[in-house]
Amino acid sequence: MIADSWKTARIALLGTTFAGVLLVLVKSILYPASSDRSVSAFDFPPTVPLSGWQAEESSSVTVPNDVPVVAAWNYRYFQDNLSLEIKMYYLTLEDGGMNQFIEKYAYGEFIPGKVLLRQQEQTGFYSLWQTEDRVNLGACINPRGGSTVTGDQFRQNRNIHDLQFSRIMFWLIGLVPLRDWRCLWTTLSVPIETGKSPQEIYPVLEQAWFSWYEWWQPRFPQP
View (tube, rainbow, N blue to C red):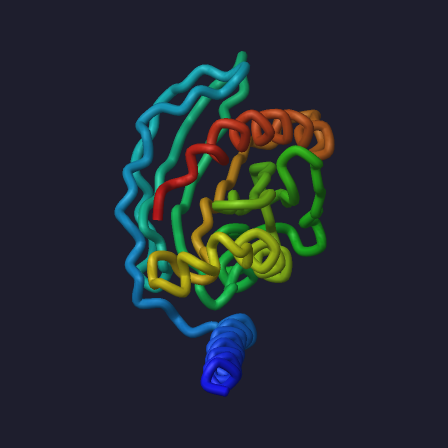
């Protein structure tokens, strides 16, 4: 009789615990709160190898105070008579505000209707666009999963790759945030060459991006 009572109480306790964990999990997914967990400082390496390109110089980038950027860096390369500029922004987007960030800071004065969205199996999504005098490629390198461009892609990537059992267990004991909102936003750009259309320059940027992503993804900063 006592054994039956204890068994019933244990089942009730396990059920209550499971329901509580499930409720917290669902609430965190549907209504993510801003985390007070600080992101560790990160120093960009002064040089990064890029296949087919010769490094020229690198320097830090000044960013507006209203952007949640941890660090930013500017790299320059050259190949024959072509110069390549790569800007990296290490930032957090806890509200999934990728769209707001790229529209306000990443794209610059792009020509309306000229932003192209493409996907490559080994890397993920990236965007191509042009400004008055430059052709550009941009994407967010994610801590897990492929690269993303839009806010929807960014959030979906977090839901798929962060909501894994191993991470949820560490989240429950307070070691990691439920979803990792960090991003390495990368913009590659080259000047528009006389006599060439942007479409002719896109492949140059794409090949540089594939090599750049391959180097950076496994070296994503630690939280």
